[in-house]
Length: 222
Image 1 (cartoon, rainbow, N blue to C red):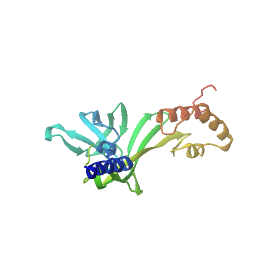
Image 2: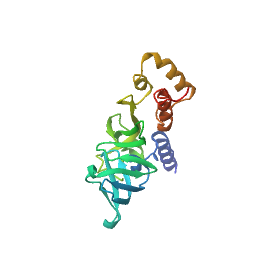
Image 3: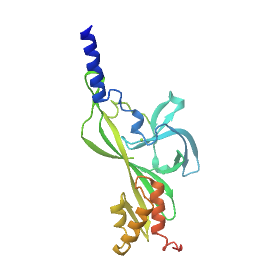
Image 4: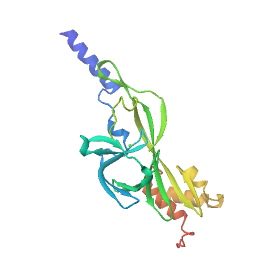
């Protein structure tokens, strides 16, 4: 009896230490947690309604083909597609990344970039362990452990593409954003970022910052 109690206590300790229940979710490998009711708009005017998502590991737009046993398939001929509307967002059919059009004029696009790691490996008594290896992917459907090469998405970063004057520029944090402007404006923009608590991981807040930075070019009053 004492031996059984000791084994149970040991199991509880191991699970508590290594988080037995922290199993990776396959939905983490997608831009959206669930497939979205999407509208695919073709350049020739055709419309296509289908459940869709973006695979961050494979860098491809995918959809569920209900006419073929709900199989997940990749969109082909992306060059024929004008826009993919899903999850309340408009995406350009770019290859290798998911680019959302938040604003057309002046341009403000955001690309979603996923960072992956090796999936946790099972330990004794059902625990898991993680590795420190991290790769970068741009861009999300449902991929099992074998299909994804044993990797899962760890977190998603955002990369912004904007119009500054007549040029297109990219940035992803405060430092790279400030580099887009003359040093004379850095203190002003830093002050705005601090007072407005701008989080560069929240696209809506970054759009607000961008519009403020362009107020003179757009003829807005201070």
